[in-house]
Amino acid sequence: MGIVNVNDDSFCGDGSLVTAEAIAAARAQAAAGADVIDVGAESARTNRDAIPIEEEIRRFRGVLESWHEVVADNAPRDAEQVWPPVLSANTWRPEVVRGVLEVAVVELVNDMGALPDDRNARLCADAGAALLIMHSVGEPKTPRFGQRWADVMAELERFFIKKRRMAEEAGLPADATVLDPGIDFAKQRDDNLAIYRNLGRIAALGRPVLAPVSRKTVIGEVLGLPDPRERDAGTIACVAAGMARGASIFRVHDVEAAWQSVKALEALR
Image (cartoon, rainbow, N blue to C red):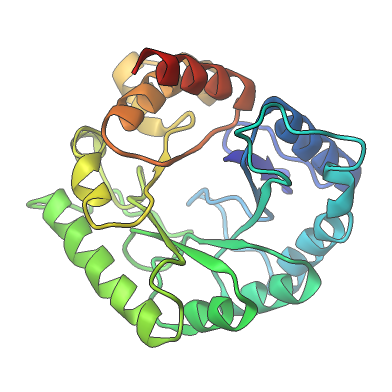
């Protein structure tokens, strides 16, 4: 899963508010082998206020209306790549989800809001889209540095069982969910490391697991690298560990490096 940020305050400085630049980034990721391209119009950084709903929809609209250009005169990198790549919208407010689903054929809604109610699940069910459920606590954009877990893996299992049931009761098919443990969201260093080590427990719940590995704060803490742009080697280590523990999708900034690592690891398994 490649990352395309349609904003000017991404935590690693890779975003752009210019539609043509966002489309060019998505084209490059598709050419590099991305199976899914995750478009977000608002930074998840907790030291920023949420942008207005209308502005988030406007940013999305410019990119989604030009989405056909991502695959125009382009071709899959190999026979295994999903083509055209799955279009994922990274957002959390139901008003934005509704607006995004009305603009383009979004196949996956990447909900960073921890599904506090069933509205986004109902919207996905009505549109025929899948829903990625990310674990967190409270409303996004609010820092949770003091959050502590006695047993973070037990919390994740409880959370995903509850939220999957909510989504299914809202009409979303049982096979239309993806689980994201929410690395760095309402979690501390040891929590994040425990999750990486125990991804198999989430995979055992029977749905694809997204491993949010790219340039995460926990990688910087382990390696002593405050600059997110210097964490790509650590990211690849997390891809390798995630493959060994049952993760299905890896959300990354550097698609080329991740594609090469996955191909090499597949050949070695």
